[in-house]
Length: 69
Image: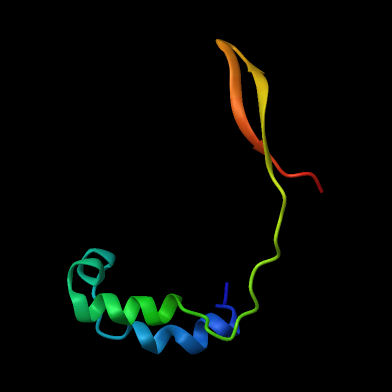
């Protein structure tokens, strides 16, 4: 399966990072990973209203977040 074009264009930002562990532990590599993850021109996500509800569970009520469509 091919990469989405937006991801494919951003892959060079990960050059030189051998693993996720290395990318998270080295400050310069972490900056590269954060640049890969950043989408400054992306629109903000839509707002959604959620409310907490309880649903029946095997050992009593279970709290859950509900977002009406």
